[in-house]
Image (tube, rainbow, N blue to C red; front, side, top):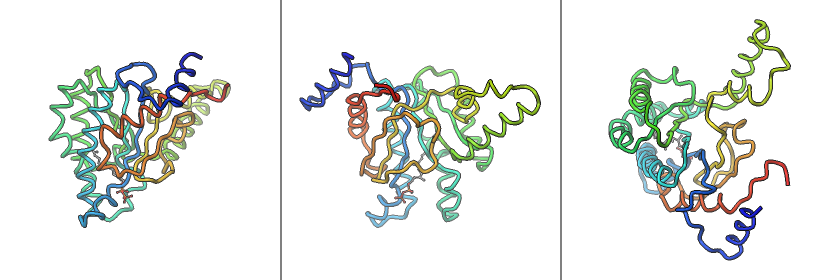
Length: 254
Ligand code: FPP
């Protein structure tokens, strides 16, 4: 109640919310990093230049999330639908995690960041998967921010596979129908033990979910910005966090 009143005061006075305050920081932030292609086009550059610049934004936002006290940061880096893009672009997107980790893994380790993957990662090219698995292994004991890359991720497939698994277990007599609840379904998703995102950010002015964490985002706050992902700065991230702090989440209650 007091928190809600404080939120209202913040909103009416337009007083900037102090980011140093550790209360009401979203535990889990998920981001649809969109607009790399348009950012490049605006500058007369090839689309892959936009993705390269987007990689720099990944580092910026990771550090900003850590500094703000966010515990989980999930980034939509490649969807199950992205394979339909021209081969040259797909090849580049598959090289990006390798380049990113080559450049940044040491610093991520210094910052106590734990790298994870979420998606049908066995279908990624071997070299890409090896680099990611290496990073996951080397950061497994880190206790700071969890940086979760959604790669070859698609939410409908994720839910369908979960339903199939549950049906198999029921058929095999390992599970009773009455034991199926939201909690069970959540644990069968690729996000496994991660809490649901508290805040979803999408850049580039598009207002849709694009098959991203459809189950997990049921009660998340959403924040959209016109800014293209390569231009997304610490300040934009703070803006999203401040907006989150101003909103009262009621989960369907009053
Ligand atoms: C959407 O923009 C972006 C992607 C499909 C790729 C996102 C990948 C990165 C930001 C780099 C990831 C980095 C690592 C380290 C894995 P778009 O190309 O669809 O943009 P557009 O809508 O303007 O064409």
